Length: 172
Image (cartoon, rainbow, N blue to C red):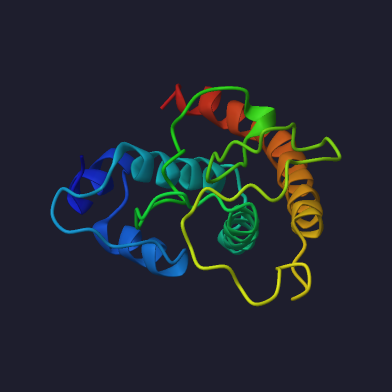
């Protein structure tokens, strides 16, 4: 478990910067050493993508889409305040996991299907289904795919320059 100061030191960022990230990404704020390894992994993923010149605005857009998709797929099967982060840091087949939350979809992201309608949460049913209310997991997944493809292309273009810069930095 980490404190905010531990996270700041491990990520080479100030506590003020991380507090701002928490606010902008609408992340829960924990007391003392209440930050999990998964929480750290999420922040680390955001930092890596920022270093690869992916804008924070783009990452926030992706984050909101991921949270919406996980909600539509009923991923919140616990009462954890960090349920949307709990899969971060798990290492397995990445083509089946969302980029920021690392949530396992059960199918490759680029495939045309996901198993809809699974609900592991004990919640009161809504008066109308999500689809009747205009929510559609496949539509949200398609939005995710488009933004993910753009981020992937930007990362591939930037990684060459980062390697070049890292090689140059060795001379300092």
